[in-house]
View (spheres, rainbow, N blue to C red):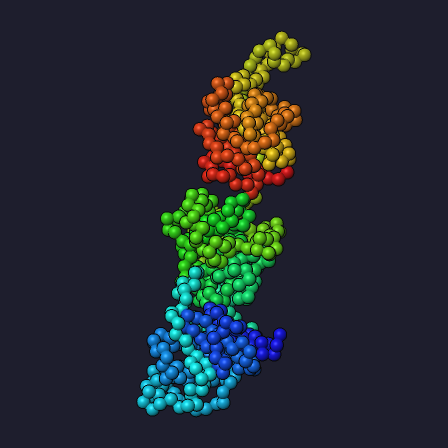
Length: 586
């Protein structure tokens, strides 16, 4: 890197360490190449739209470049473009004087000009003075544009696709608050001048530790990353979370106050604590993220945790009381509309980062840790009440603390609604047991009341296409067989479906898993198999149907009671209106 560029970038880093400039610099576009329109004798010019053109080859000291960049962004922060005085060099001279006085008092960087006496007063007062008495020649030379102006009126600040219209005075005001807080902390001995500045997001994180026990343990486990370069590389407009690395990314360019930071940090923590990434289970990741955002933001507003960012967030009062799964089933019916929404990371982007973003994958140990931390936080919150919690949030946290029920157990519970235990009765028939001492005295025994085999049966429609793995077929058929034998189901109606339908008829449960030969391995069309069962004269009208598929199939439907078994992570090409069991990998 040439010395001129090295000095410039060193100065840029110095300017970014100034609280009043950091957020402003994050919200402007800086150009330092052949596209720059900076005059040859200038240092930099600033545009009303939020762009700074820097001289691409001028040599200067790092502190001088820090001063120049701070001067340019303060034109925006002081709202000098609010009054339309384009081409009025007197107005620009007055603005330059105010900024130079401000930076001199702040001791920010080093001015590239020799010190001179500067008039006091506001921009308007200095402007009137210059209009009456003229502008001293040495004042004209103190602009960053050389002999030309350093303020270029090219229209209002560009609206960001996420933040909306940029209001630079508000961003500057927050930077000034940060600078004052830093000065007070240093004066009070709370920290030294060399100690790293406590950012607004860090103060928001500490608030959870001292004032909000529900999320205190979770907040302590995460590291805040406030690096604009990393946020730019990961396309993070406001915030995102990486559960595996225990990092919450906060973009300084968002320029949020402490209440907004609390809201965003709590939002990201709840994503991890409620296992939203693991619960995606094959759904569209972005739409699932949107559904979870609606739930989380509704809870945070109800609890009064911080304040929703001024640039907005996903919230719909009509979705109150619905869980993420129910909201997802709603929004997938209008994908075109919801694809245009933005999470706190950006439009069309998930703020739950994962391996697809080039980061590490989550581990089971971390998953257990987050569950325990959230459960402990709930216990502390209830012991020392810090406000009401939404019932839905409490239910989800309590449900996460209980191990999930295996899929085959849930499938058996569904079957139990159709196949209760066989009814039995006492009998004294001659077939009963006898004692050898009194062979003529019959003794009672319990016998099962016989039931028609066709009344105690169910149908299985099995996807035998080429996409179905052998291990999945074996696991599914084995589960069905073991359940049927345990519930004394004498026969099961089995139908294979791929490009064609194969009716295997009624088979005893013990023959399903071991001796059935799968015929098909072609495409996947399940509807004919379902229709065959529903029209079969020898299949009971109230008999349930179990459909086993890998979800790469047609859009089928059934008028009978039915359930569907799919591999974990697979998603059907339609919204099912029946129980769906996700089969775990063998």
